[in-house]
Image 1 (cartoon, rainbow, N blue to C red):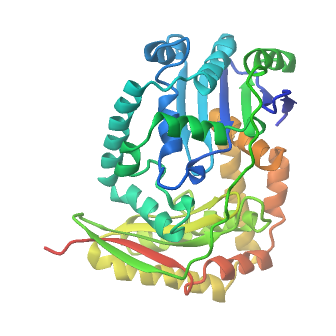
Image 2: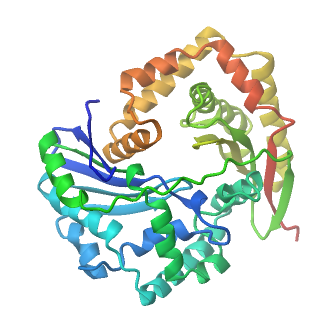
Image 3: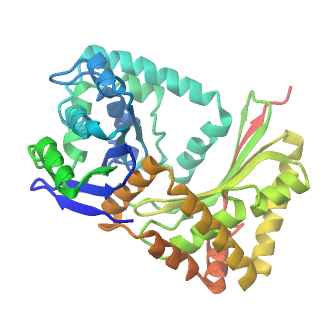
Length: 410
């Protein structure tokens, strides 16, 4: 896909992706997230993401929320372990309005104490709600175990204690230390010329003060294999198996993405879904996931099932892993896996807001954006030997951590 990049004097990059659609999409993404939080400040990045919508130097909360919704646009935001993102979808005439609002909330929020107190209550309710969903909460607890003692293990929402103790000074200090202008991308996908995007982007972001403090991320260590069970008042057993994996900069990331998709990724034809759900009817949900990060990655397998079927489900998963090791994919199986993965990626391009966010992340991570053709070439270049190598490295049963939520016996 065609794209253009313009860098402002302060380091902020403007990404322009032309499109003939009447609907435009834009985002501002910053290379900072929960892993960058100081000790005992878990949830701070997410807290700030909430607060930027509460008041700025020139707008009230209602004015912020209505600025785009009043013209039918959609505005939202999210925080991950490594990114903070605000994004919007809108009709083409409202690009200037959108970029103006992005600038206002990201760089001119004032964080009033009364709004902080209100938002703390909202997030505490969010934490409580999340804890009532074991299929979601187990991921956070698993990652806390996988990265014990490291900020990557922090729950993105934070804890009840950490959220209650946030101060305005914490918020301001985090922004100053982590909102680096050379790691901010403002991306626009729409029916605009490059000059149009550069002119409007410059008008709203060129005056942002340059801010590029040193990056202080620490790579997590590898901990000994762990098998942990927590008993909870729940109906089903929930289980995750997983390990640290490849980072976004490692070449083995591509074969692992392909392996993940084949083994337990999107679609009902994955190995785990066919064997565990369809053949034996043991689990309604069973899936694998691979999330590459800047200096490590997370590979995991999740399933939920009746307590009595948990041991059987685990043994079947181990059986499928063993089969992959003893009988690697042949050329025909690998080509089918590639065709499926490539087709899913191509269809995913239709999600235009997801596409522009993905492109902005790639610009931050790699200082370039691969074309769809290049992505497909990398997938098609994966060999059966590379797949077998990744299977042996990542799907090592002796190194897989196991984390389980088990129902309390009555």
